[in-house]
Length: 99
Image 1 (cartoon, rainbow, N blue to C red):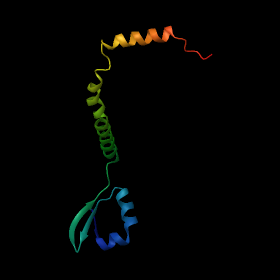
Image 2 (image 1 turned 135 degrees about the vertical axis):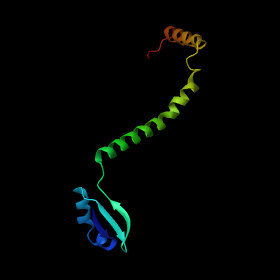
Image 3 (image 1 turned 90 degrees about the vertical axis):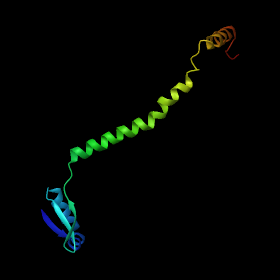
Image 4 (image 1 turned 180 degrees about the vertical axis):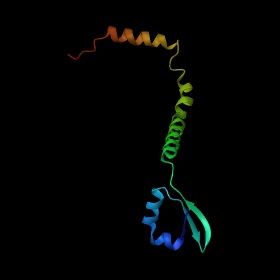
């Protein structure tokens, strides 16, 4: 593991990032005291986590729809069949053409 001070990180950020991309782990120090470890990420794990987070967000955003569907239960009501029949008869019995 490579040891890098904050000043060196500031001056050579691009080089250090390239080293990390190549798989090297870096111990970041401030005045000689360790403060962080910079290491390469597991791209597959990150993609999986982002994908599962996106799926969760989609489920949550559509949750209102599942809850709200019950609010429309009145729409398909047997009593409405009378109105449907009346509407059908009205359309059939009237002349809807222009002229």
